[in-house]
Amino acid sequence: MNQFTIEEFIQNVGAVAALIGSLVVVWFLCKLMFRYLLSPHDESWKTAPRRVGDVKAAYGGLLSDLVYRIENPALFDSKVPATKEFELLLMRWDDEEKGLSPETAARLAGELELAFAAARKNAETLGIRHLPRTARKNGQKAAHAARLAQHATTTGEREAAMATVIRLLDALALYYMPTPHDIPKMLTGTGK
Image (spheres, rainbow, N blue to C red):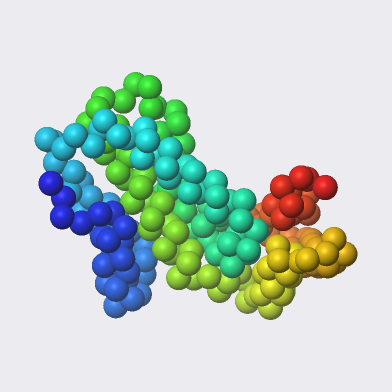
């Protein structure tokens, strides 16, 4: 039986990452370590689909959280190695889930959990600094305006803040940021 949860393992690895200076290097070390954490007698294969569903739900929640997407854009940028690894594992699960052996399903679910935790930790460590240097100030303003829109008490305040977010993010023109079409849906849930 494993003594650490994946989240605890990632938190402990975060300290090592600070010393090494690269979460990508630590990610690959974690990946290798995870293969040893999942023993052949482990029955985690029974929960693999639920575990992957939990990862997908958590990722979906972050994907639809406008402030999180602005402040932690590396999680949504497939050029970031940790994010790319997570996305590739997610696609692999979707493509192969039905034909996986129980052991492979358990291992892949574990790797997916670890990849998501590592990509998220990497994105949160980088924060707004992932944006190009020239875009950071407008990124910070967009995050502030998104918070104002979320907490606005009147329709006028919400619409003004939303217009600011749309203008700022549209000007950034970064493929991993929400589009002007998506922003109203993300803020109001109505698409209007």
